[in-house]
Image (cartoon, rainbow, N blue to C red; front, side, top):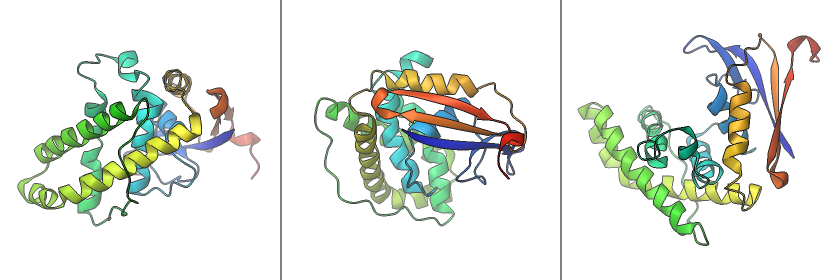
Length: 224
């Protein structure tokens, strides 16, 4: 079992209140899906960097997409894994344009096994969709810079996503058909839950049992 803690606070960038990882209280607040993503698809050694987020996107393939999350939440013909994940690459590109470098990934090889082809297909389609989307959103100067950087970024991102997928598989085992339901149970339990400043949520995840508990801890009960 491992646990992930969240604290209720105000979002300093966008306003409003919600849950932020206690490990990174300065991060933007999340609800529902975002909180479940942080609990199930990120790893304990994540330092908030871009390569950590790309690993979480690789984990997303095992936790959500192989088990049919897109069928659970909408039209699977439109809301594909590639379309869903590509949207976040716009922010990734702005992060790079602002000066953050993507850490070089160790050399990886194509994923194999029962799900190998599906995993590689999702990664490839995501990166193709991301390039199209990013270039359509950026102005000409920024788009030209991204075109220069894209091939190296794409290869590096692919490796980090493979690493994240494999880490998630080791964490949860061959349970991709069950994990979307665990993800949904976390997201649904907190989607409309309104806390007060300083309250905490603890998500307890039992990887070998493919289940999770969400525990609410009001601020007045916490040790100062």
